[in-house]
Length: 326
Ligand code: SAM
Image 1 (tube, helix red, strand yellow):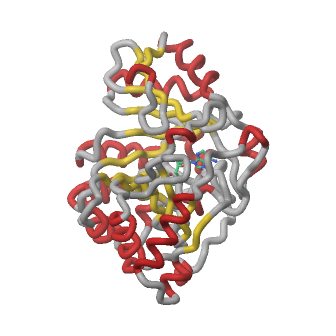
Image 2 (cartoon, rainbow, N blue to C red):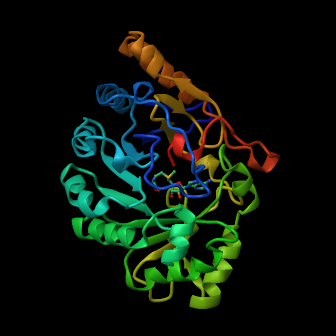
């Protein structure tokens, strides 16, 4: 079992399958982003060995992310091998949905349980503007394909960026009136790459809630006000789905964090917003034994930072969000 020194049980691993992406969201990475060479990335056999190791340490819940996880070569057999790992009980994916039109069904058949799909606006022009070249129609088709394939309950993630899409939040929340989806609004966080945009265009959850309530009426708290993962959950009156708020900036949820992250280049990152990482790939390639790797993971987890330091102006600048895995 993996516990940190604060007594938190760390059993949820977010695995970045690649730093590559087929979109270039303005708040996520620069248009001319340079990607790491493939030789520096975890290969399938290395990744699967680490997944088995994490599972043996009690990690039972995985989320596959990136970059864009669906652009990884051989994604379907890889997901199949990951979901078949003994001890892993839940595997989900965060994706931009671009390739789900063709991949949703095969991914479901490979054992993937559900997906979170990023969608920041329902306005096709603004979608293109935010993603630099993405097609809203393609992503919408991907969302419907995911639902048809049973990759449910479906969650849609919207990062709200001042000057781009804050006016679209009520329309996005309105999707829940008819669809049994959870639409979650994420406060933008600062990383490397687009740091100025990320620091200066944040829209806080309270403002987003007010915008939604002005159009749709009161948001009723669900779950007795308890967090669902990292999100505070609400429902509009008579709605089929839910509205969530992930307020990492204005209301951090570090005390309840159960996560660690494995980057595509094989680093164990203990907090999304702290630079601290433990290199697993170098020792793995140097011939480290299973016990040595296991101890590296346990020590890393033990020293997981308590929480982020955004309130103190501390920003982790060693990677972009896409290089960590959202
Ligand atoms: N490509 C996939 C996708 O689009 O969902 C997975 C990776 S992406 C980095 C994961 C999530 O992080 C997306 O919902 C994205 O919008 C969000 N994201 C990217 N940059 C962010 C930032 N600076 N603050 C908060 N969320 C961010």
